[in-house]
Image (tube, rainbow, N blue to C red):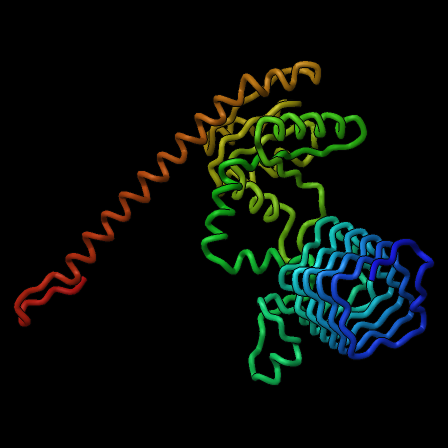
Length: 332
């Protein structure tokens, strides 16, 4: 079927049980207060459809498009959302639980804190959650659909290695207290770094519940290639002190001078820019080669240190397993 528009078919109040819907095109469809159980949606397109209050139970989806769709007050229980596209969808649902979410696209997904999201399966399977339990297989689960892809990604040790490499090759942590006119400065700096191929990391969100503010900053700095700090923020010098008591990353600072800078120079390389906003980006461009050079030097030192430890470790293993007469075996 091909249905386009809001009023062509009205499913309101219906119960759909045990049906299969294949390759449906239903842009802008309205489905309100519908019970959908034991159904199968295959490769449909429900672009900007409106699902208000439906209850999906024991239902499978495969490669179904819900881009820009609304799911107000919707319930998903024991479903399989295999490779569905929720890009830009309004997902302020009532509940999603015991549901497979492997391959779900959640770019720009709108959610709310009231969503119940327990037991979301992130394993690749066409089964329902109940099927896995009947097979006595406890699936790998998370409790947040937006975190599902990240957790699955991090479960692959090769992907973790690639992620750290990308962040350490391109990540730049920008510290400051950006309010009013300073937001314009932050945006200009961000646009400039992105234009030059960097991934700008700006800490302007609430800290995680299990980390202090300083611990959060240190974690983000550890993932970055180098740190850029606007010293006009009142707490920024203290944050820098916390970072560089533990880490050794190249640091570029601008804004008001700080008495902490001499102490920081004992722990890391500090490059200072003295300029106003009109020439800030020009000065950043001049300082960037120095930052890259200090980063490259730091990587060389780390590589040399690790290689040295590896050689020592190999020597230790050779000594540990060196053959000899049984009565004179040496163990280290």
